[in-house]
View 1 (cartoon, helix red, strand yellow):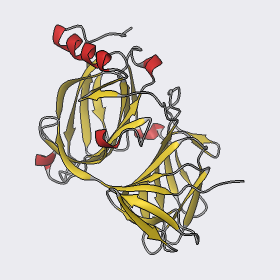
View 2 (cartoon, one colour):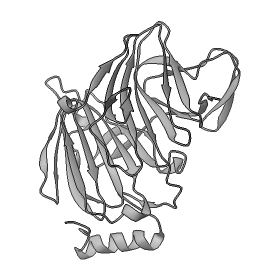
View 3 (spheres, rainbow, N blue to C red):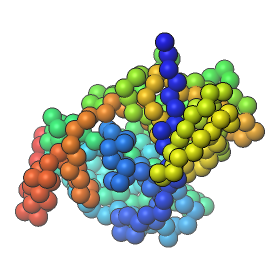
Amino acid sequence: MSSARRIRKVFKSKPVQEGAGVNLKRAFGFSQVPQFDPFLLLDDFRSDNPADYLKGFPWHPHRGIETITYVLEGSVEHGDSMGNSGVITAGSVQWMTAGGGIIHQEMPFGDRKGSMAGFQLWANLPASQKMIPPRYRDIKAEQIPKIRLADGSEIRIIAGTIGETSGPVNDIAIDPEYFDISIPPGTTWTHPVETGRNAFAYVIAGSGLFCHDDEPFSYETEGVSYFDMEAGTLVENETLVLFTDGDYLTITTEDAAIRFLLVTGHPLHEPIAWHGPIVMNTREELRKAFEDFENGTFIQGSS
């Protein structure tokens, strides 16, 4: 018998400053580990003010994770210690597997109006892959399939499969799904999600009712419990929904359309030792990573 996913928690993104002084919104991060396993962090760097983002993210190391940068407006210039360099343009994705060690930089630039919009997601690597050779994938906008459903919904598939259409990202240990979904007003959209996966949705425009049905259910937001009898939970821009387990989820729109990122993945259930841009399994591995960085031996696992 199929079971609907419910709302486990609702998070409102919070202002933080990262890099050389970039003002952004954090949907979840270190303090929410391990609720989002295998995902570690989601940052929202949308702004119409160049002062918020132009200082960028100068050269810094990563080890033990994957960083996924999705740009909607403006662009991000990047370079790394493997010799990769280029520009992530609107609609494109940079999927970087840090593995045993990489040093890179990311410098955002707005469009003609000064607008910048993008998101960075961190995914954990299993212990068996923490020290693999780093890998870089530059995924152009035209490589990301976009499907239109009969109800008018549109979905960009970065990773995962809907129907017979699959995204360009595969061969990832956590087998992620990463969709950019737009649903028109007055629509109910249901998506099957394999039982055992962790799943969340982050609203980037409009609003919608998540897990809407006639049965009462409870949900939590920042430790405060609520009880909703019938109306569902109306979720708006810059808000994240973390789902319980189940094998499908439902989103319903009323008078407004909604656009959101839907991300799922297989949890690793492994210990996490995390400091700054490095995520390992033990404190000793973490200490060794920073020692390598100080000694100039950080770039390991490179082919």
